[in-house]
Length: 101
Image 1: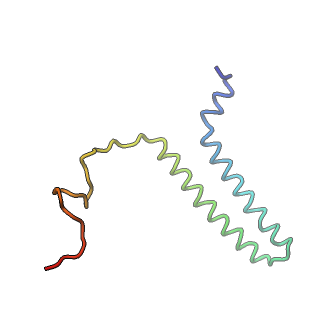
Image 2: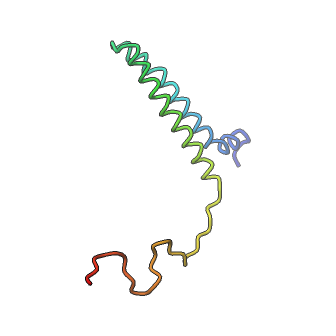
Image 3: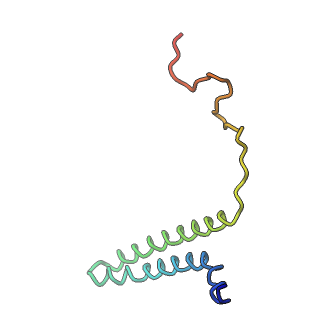
């Protein structure tokens, strides 16, 4: 049986992983413009890159949080008989194709 500290760490590992990813992305949003200016890019260009990275980071964070919430919900039970809107209902029926008249 793991010690109490390890049990808590394993229970929150999903949230910690997302937080770690977001932290590293924020760090790169700061580091990239500094490196670009150091290599001779304009300050405006470096700030544009930082804003682009910040936007991508924000979108990824939202998607990661949605994914966490979706994984926490139980999967719905699906019926095997449901064929969807375009499923075959009549034996031998065919989808589309050319029709000769």
